[in-house]
Amino acid sequence: MSGLLALLDDVAGIAKIAAASVDDVMGQAMKAGSKAAGAVIDDAAVTPKYVSGFEASRELPIIWRIGRGSIINKLVFLLPVGLALSNFAPWAIPPLLMLGGAYLCFEGAEKIAHALFSSGGHDPGPDGSHAIGDPAHLEEQKIKGAIKTDFILSAEIMTIALSAIPQSTFWMEAATLAAVAVMITLAVYGSVALIVKLDDIGLWLAQNGRLGATRGFGRGVVRAMPKLLKALTVIGTAAMLWVGGNIIVHGLAELGWAAPEHVIHDIAVAISGGGGGFGQWAAIAAMDGVLGLALGLVLIPIGTKLVAPIWRAIMPSGI
Image (cartoon, rainbow, N blue to C red):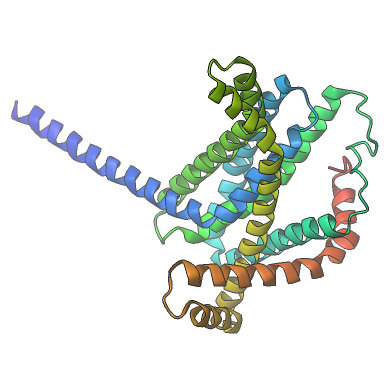
């Protein structure tokens, strides 16, 4: 009997240790995931465009397939690479972060340049035309393009999360990164699914609501959707520039040139009156965003004239 009690006591001790480990993993995952907020917002803002133009019945299946591709990107490809870098080449993480930050700056600046200087024409379809000859083929093309775009954003998210994890064991890092991957994917594509179906929900309420207030609310939702999608685009663009600029500034400091980071911090302190808090954070974010925009504008000709042709040569599908 005493042996059984001792065994139960050992099992209880192991359970407590396991529970504490789970708490540690989830806590680190939440902190690491919050560091990648800008890239996450951009991911959520970018994805709804991939379901535009399709029948309502195809929206959720498309989002499900993109989400499944996203989790494969994170867990199958990026997680092992991230762990290998962390354990065998940690010196490579800051440069890779800066490369991802430069990409975010490029994307954000390109969106702003397109909005300001676009001739007003419509972007061609994946086959170079506006016609949708085969909806099933177009759906496949859109999904492949979305998963490839997600791979770049997921790489940035996972690298940011990896850099935010405190020094720990291999398995703790692996569990934390896996938790970040699952939580962020669920958050992003759950939010996207809700966003793209809001107009259908609003229409149903407008047509079937029992109360006048319910029908009015449904009509309001339908009318608000274009503004919501536009706001998401603006928020996603601002987040890209802010996060991208911040990554570049912080990366320069880690590589030995801390002057930009110190100057931005000192200006933010002066603007906020030294009180810290939201005012100081907003000032830093604004300056990081301006730097991100400037860098992105410089990178636009490099990306479009040099990188894009190389990418199309490597990926003949042109997506």
